[in-house]
Image (tube, rainbow, N blue to C red; front, side, top):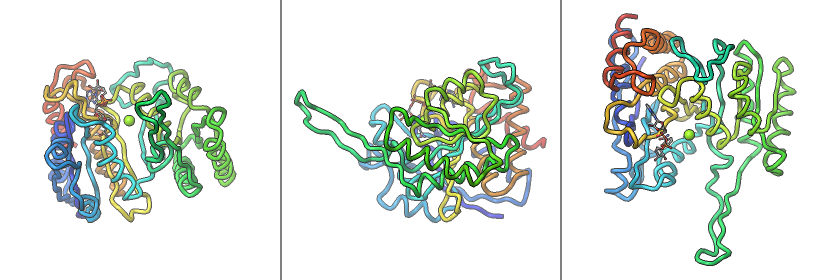
Length: 355
Ligand code: NAI
Ligand code: MG
C-alpha cells in the first residue's frame, strides 16, 4: 500500500506539532510494515504570504490535486489578517476538493477526566459532522457606505439543497453504523428565518429515510448548553459550517482541550484528496516555546488511517495516545504536565514500537 501526502505545516505551533506527527508516521511505517507514505512538504504559510503576496502559489490547488492526502498543521500569524490566511489557504482546499464533511470526534480518551467531571462521562463519545463548504462561510456579501454614518456590512448564508442533503445523508449513514442510532441536528429556525427552516425541512426529509434513527432538532443555543449538561446523550451531531465550528471548540473543551482535538476534511466520494488537521490554530501565545500538545495532530493521523480503511494502523496510533495519557508522566502543560512537544512525540513513538 502506497500513498502520497502533501504536508502543509503552516505557522506558529503548526510546524511544531507537525514534526511530531511525521515522527509518529515514520514509526508506524517502520514498525508495522506494509504501508508506505511519501511526503512532500509545502512552505505555504503566512511567511510565504509576506514574501509572495499570496498564501500558496497560483497553481497550488492544481499541485495538491495529485496527492492522495493532505496533512495540515495550522495557519495564522499576527502580521497577516486571519480572514486572509484562512480564506486563501484552508477554505479553497476544502472547497476545491469537495471536502464537504468535516468530522470532529468528541471523545473522552482513557486516562483523561472531563473538566465537567460529569458522572456519565465514560460515555462521552460522539462525533460532530460539520458542513464544510457552504453555509455561513459563503464569501457572499459586501461592505457599503464606508466613512459615513450609514456604514454597513452584509454577509449572506448559502444553503443549497444539494449541499444540505449530502451532509445530512452522510450524518445519517454514519449514525446507522454507530450503536446509539441517534442524530442531533443544530438549527436556529426561530431567528434565522429563511435558511434554517429550509435546513429543518431537509432534516425531516432525510430522517424519514432512516426510521430506526432517532432525530433531535435543537436550537444552537440550547444545544451548546446540552454539550455541558448532558454530553453523554449525543451520538452524531450534524451542524452547518459556523455552528459546527463553534460546537467543536466547545466539544474539545469538554474532553481535555484544543490540544487533543483532531479533525478530518473528507471528500466521501474519494474523487479528491481529503485533508487531516488538528482543530486548533497556530496558537501565537505559545508558539516557539516547544510546549504545544502534539496529540491533536497525531490523532488526525489516526483519522487518516480510518479514511484509508486501515483500522489496525488507526488503532495502533490511538492506543499509543491513550497509553501516554494513562501513564500520565509525559504530558504538555495544557494537560497539567511539564513535558515538551518533542518529549510527548518521542513517548508516542516509543509506544508505537511497543505495540
Ligand atoms: P488557537 O486554536 O490557535 O488557540 C486557542 C487557545 O488554545 C490558545 O490559548 C492556545 O495556546 C491553545 N492551544 C491551541 N492549540 C494548542 C495545543 N496544541 N497545545 C496547547 N494549547 C493549545 O486559536 P486562536 O488563538 O483563536 O487563533 C490563533 C490563530 O490561528 C489565528 O490566526 C487563527 O485565524 C488561526 N486559526 C487557524 C486554524 C487552522 O489553521 N485550521 C483554526 C483556528 C484558528
Ligand atoms: Mg474553529
